[in-house]
Amino acid sequence: MDNRRWISWLILNLVVASDKVSAIFVDEPLLYDTFPPDFIWASATSAHQIEGAWNVDGKGPSIWDTYTSQPGIVAEGATGQTACNSYYFYQKDVDALKSLNVSHYRFSISWPRVLPNGIGQVNQPGIDYYKNLIAALKVANIQPMVTLYHWDLPQALEDMGGWLNASVADWFEEYARLCFTQFGDDVKIWVTLNEPWITAWQGPKYGPGTYTYQAGHNLILAHAKAYRLYESTFKASQQGKVGIALNVNWFFPGSDLIADKDAAERALQFMGGWFANPIFGSGDYPSIMKLKIGEKSAQQGFNQSRLQENTAEQKPWQKLLVPGSADFLGINHYTSSLTVNQPSNINDVSYESDQDLYSYYDPSWYGSGSPWLKITPFGLRNLLGWLRDKFNNPEMIITENGCSDTAGNLDDMLRIYYYKHYINNVLKAIKTDGVKVSGYTAWSLMDNFEWRAGYNEKFGLFNVDFSSPELPRTAKASARYIAQIIHDNGFRSDQPCNNYPISK
Ligand SMILES: *[C@@H]1O[C@H](CO)[C@@H](O)[C@H](O)[C@H]1NC(C)=O
Ligand SMILES: *[C@@H]1O[C@H](CO)[C@@H](O)[C@H](O)[C@H]1NC(C)=O
Ligand SMILES: *[C@@H]1O[C@H](CO)[C@@H](O)[C@H](O)[C@H]1NC(C)=O
Image 1 (cartoon, rainbow, N blue to C red):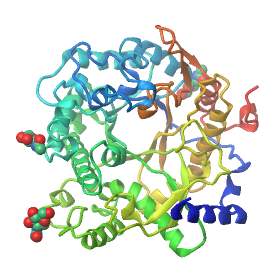
Image 2 (image 1 turned 180 degrees about the horizontal axis):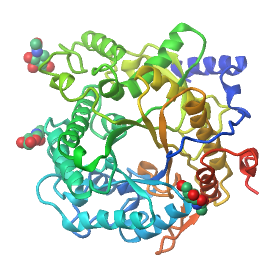
Image 3 (image 1 turned 30 degrees about the horizontal axis):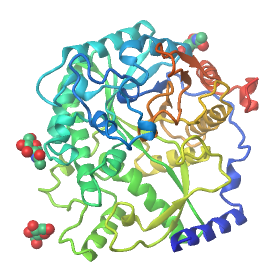
Image 4 (image 1 turned 60 degrees about the vertical axis):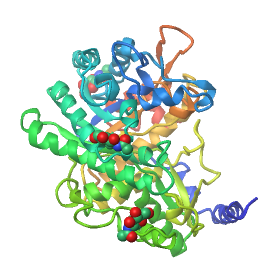
């Protein structure tokens, strides 16, 4: 056991012994009440995770097509080359959505399917695919909620520096213009970027601690340019909304020490505030990020902060573009952790080390099929309250929330437990805490290509039989449970699954 692990082991045991944080998840009482009228109920997927058809009808390769073609990267050599084959089987997806009675379907457009080189030549079959999907949704009375960028950057743009090239915001604006022009008459909710935190931090080449912030900077600019384009050119006629989907965990302090409470707040600011504060807050990065990264950069011998300097010419976006560049805040939320203060090694130049903290899970929390996902429903309510307070109670849509297992079984009682308690915490946030949440999106509609985890981590409300060429989608018990909540627009005390975690 190295030092860090020993210290965290010690703290963990102290926390467990004091039994402070873990107890709140046990038998949390449900609120029986309804969501506001016109509440958005949705389920979600993303292009690379479901479409397949990776190299047909003129589609260009994305960075994920390239990435998964290298051996040893993805579990069991899995790829998204076929996935759920939704490029051909999209009607099956629409049928599944219809049986849930959702009002909206959140899906993403594959940038290289409509612009094979990222910019320039348009691929008409790609446009037609999304037009056909939107038409099928219309027949089913389901509204599209469309993500422009869910991680599948055209490889041609990656070859020119990708998110590190300052031109990327202009490339993204061109792509957004195409999508608004082609689909905007039917799409009234747009999400520019899905989880820019992942792109900036976990994008394969964006380490160690400079490129991460540079990519983050360009992502914010790209988002803002797309928003302003919609605002100036499309909004008057199309009457839609444009937001961004940020993934934010909740961080419980690991103890009552002030230093640990500060560490938990710092973790929230580094994860959520990084993108939310420029767009929904002061227009600049959170002050704790500027302070920490500035101090460390100086100690590490950089002649300026690795986070962009706060000068007018380096931040033209501060005044013009970025503040207020969203009609709603999309939140992707899955899990929580415990966080303690822990100064990091100054020689370690990285986003993680900049935070001077250590996060871990309470072993009493339920797990899932994903090592990073522990079931902590109350964390979502805390997070929504935190966002309300920090960003002046913006309109929020839960753009993702869900749970994995590795079995894909139809009697998925763990997922029912998860949805029941997380959705109920959203209800409490709205009814009790006055948070403005206008929609909820279950991730995911069906089992699909879960990035580096391949097909092992299954998040679906519908099981997909990947051994059959027809890839049939079959409702799990959780699909019926969600359909019930949607039907009731909330929680009824006489609905058996609300009172017993295990389906009949
Ligand atoms: C960045 O993009 C421009 C085109 O906008 C290109 O000329 C330049 O070579 C790119 N930079 C890198 C490092 O590839
Ligand atoms: C800062 O360092 C970079 C190299 O890391 C150098 O090119 C630049 O001139 C330096 N700027 C100042 C103001 O010293
Ligand atoms: C679907 O939802 C609508 C309201 O949005 C409701 O009137 C209808 O009964 C629901 N259908 C089913 C099958 O639950």
